[in-house]
Length: 312
Image 1 (cartoon, helix red, strand yellow):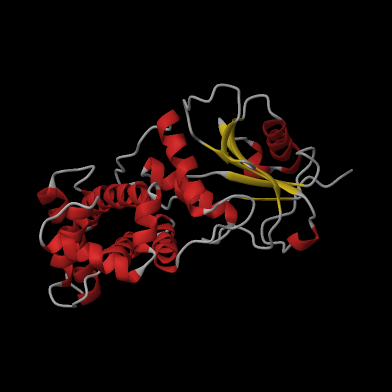
Image 2: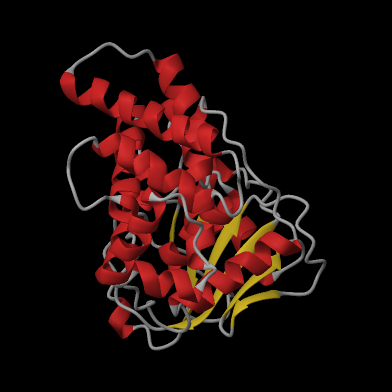
């Protein structure tokens, strides 16, 4: 009998896999795609699980190999990566799959919960490798995330961001500052602990909105963040205060001051939503990508915020 899967932890040589398909099974209820695949890129699509080859294979893995304790989850959708050729496996922030997953998190403004990844060399008749790399920890599970439903507008946003980042058949070639920001955003929502989540979020803001000087850093980053967001959210005071709260929490963590878990919960949810909105706004605009990918242009933009101007 052909082996259905390789246990988690077994190292496989993907360079020997000439043409492989990945399926990432997700909980994305009530998405509007109907039964037709929704194309994110030419070779990446979002599809419904029900009655698909991927669903049948997953159920076999559960029944015959005891995957997920023999009790399959009711995944309703999956991401299909067709004929992917690369050598690294997720979870790695720069892998093709994790770049796309990161965009789903940005668009929905909520960390990805449990999902199942399956690698197949025979169009999902069997599994060559499977793993479950994303799980929200008990601490993070208590955070109230202001998430968006996955509708046609959100899916289209993901497709635009993927195209702008150059995510197609291979890894996207992203500019260093933006790439690093996306990496720390990934580290934030993959964090197991509230403290790590907070620190990684502040690193995202510093990579994007750090001023030329180092005095009153949190104040300047808060102003720059609020000014950047004013195009989609005119409440400058709200966003300014949210950044200041985030930085106060980071300061408390670094310097050993008391901060309760309840305070952390109240800060992480709105801060994550705000930074997700920043990244979506940035990644949907080729002009902004060019600006933040060029340090001279980025600094020029930051200087306009001192005088209260909007970007154009």
